[in-house]
Length: 533
Ligand SMILES: Cc1cc2nc3c(=O)[nH]c(=O)nc-3n(C[C@H](O)[C@H](O)[C@H](O)COP(=O)(O)OP(=O)(O)OC[C@H]3O[C@@H](n4cnc5c(N)ncnc54)[C@H](O)[C@@H]3O)c2cc1C
Image (cartoon, rainbow, N blue to C red):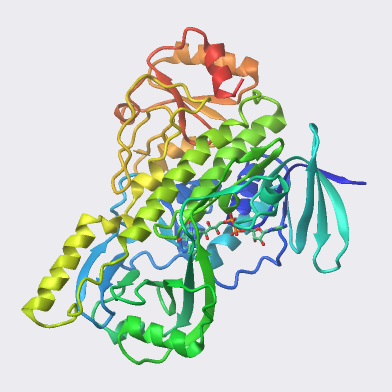
């Protein structure tokens, strides 16, 4: 008998796992098919953004992620210097879990490499009833009809093939997405690709070799080489990344060792653990949907790692899609709901690609003179010119970007009801909370620091009401009749100024869908719009 699942996810990377986690949490059965054995040899992703952390909080795994991350008191210092032992040109400290300087939400961004993050996500997803995760299963064929998707799956261990059917299929199968190819969806290139190299090494006491103290991100300023040296575990694991290699470049251990020593600025003992050559691309799929098949994560967009947006953008995709798939499976979705996924998420990917491109471009060409390290007035003048350039280019945005992480909004979405207020300016380094429709619903602590307003959201819609019980009841009745899951929550006096209106409707993904001081003229019309009818 052919196995059937409401949703099949191709790819068990962070996006496939996040989608499975959220679907499972919603009680939707799904199957994740991953072609590898699931082991992660070297981490790509190191930065878990604060919105992703907020979703981890929803699933009850934020503490576990934090415990696996680099220590909370590890300084979030970004340093610009010629080498770790060279002259410091500039440094700044990003807000982090250790310095209580994150006013925007309950969960600051974290540094928890993929080696630790993915297994936590996998354990949670796999613990949800209805979620199956199968490894060594490669999807080799995808076909669809109006009613279902049929796929062929090869067991990469035995070579045996089986057929599975699905109500919906989501391709979370990464940059080379088989799903994208099978659906005939093209990628649109937004910039020339560059070849980069990640050099992983271990050193027990790197911090004792220089006078800069513990550093999270070190940007070596060099005419040739440059790049980024970053800690992986806050202890002994490091990664040096440099770019602009020729296509035929073949690294030798000696060459890699030289680059590492140049970045640190002295000869020292270390152990190279891996060398990975990869291609930095800025790409977006021309569309995110073909019938019952969707793309999410790197399958839909690829962006430079400058800023730590890649996985976090993909997890945003997963969380936008999961409640819509739930609605489709449970039967309360209107015909336009699943189409709104691309309408909402593709513009966010384009925005984040632009941010990442700006960051990578801004970090280039900083080595303005040959005397950067010189202990002379001329050397100091050169360092000052570089400092000015770093400030002019706002390079702290690489590590401090709450507007990118939390300030994305679904402007013009067909399933959001605009309230007529003007669109606020786009933010990246700063972030201003707002309950304007399309935005992430604002965070405020309630009950001291135990609960956030965000803890109310997730399963179903939440209608926040500040003294508008009768109007809220009219809307709740319309929702009931349409099958749209909705809870009415009385807002507190403290949170009223943040939400501004007496009635604010928050979607299952935590974004505001509608707000007003009174019920709409026809609550059914409003509810229908929110469910894509
Ligand atoms: C150097 C570097 C640093 C980065 N740092 C960050 C960061 O700090 N923060 C951040 O947010 N992002 C970062 N990124 C980006 C991030 O790693 C990616 O965006 C993220 O891994 C994408 O996840 P994904 O699940 O979409 O794809 P992937 O991680 O590529 O996973 C796709 C999975 O699909 C499987 N698969 C493929 N084809 C099939 C098939 N036919 N059948 C079954 N399985 C299949 C693959 O085996 C793979 O496991 C970084 C990227 C790089 C290169």
